[in-house]
Length: 308
Image (cartoon, rainbow, N blue to C red):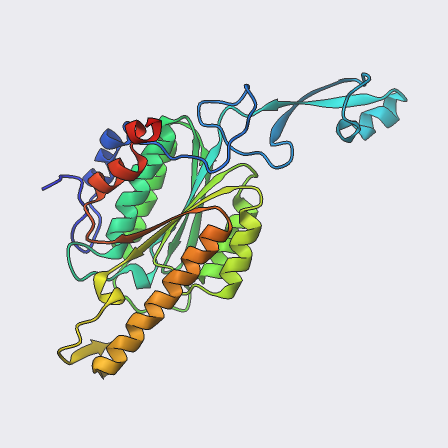
């Protein structure tokens, strides 16, 4: 069995750290790329300048009037232009769901464990490309914002916090302190810098029309990747037997009709998310939490595949 295959109800710190070994052979592709020759190894799209301020100099014929520094111009009574340098690193920002609905799994591991391992592997992949790493980890008591930073230290911080929030899960029943997906996406809008890659890893249990509106705004200036994590029982419950579901207070029996209705709700939600991603030109991946993760990543994000 693959040593990096997520398993069980809780993440294993060693596995999250060891994901670095396969990340060297992976790549997170940008949906749109800057055409500038100044871009770094991981080019990103820049809608707007997408630049960092460098200095000012006197205005020269042909300069973009939108770059005039009006404060310096007013002070000196001579037109001055702002100069920008293109960033050589792009932020890769992860929204990783570790809320109560992720604390469920019927086969190899819980959705929360699978998501933590996936986020760690893709995080190491982005770090190998020289990207700055940031994250928002949604958990049972709210959300933790990790601002984008470079170097290995950023990944170690992300792994440490992911593991801590994963270990804190104890029930699939949401608390009053949990943030909704729309609230989390709103927080991402405030945290993200234009030109970032936003990787969303979630079961999208509370997906809504409001979420679609928010990701439309996010996609205007950023690349988006959706990883929709689910358990096979969410997609199709057994129809040949009665099932009992306990929410901690009462037991509800599910007959075949109720099981079918739940499966239909899942399919409708999944189709809505996929359609939203397609409309925005964003990558969408539906992943069952029993999937062999390493082979799947090598197939879809392997460097050799991307060159072919």
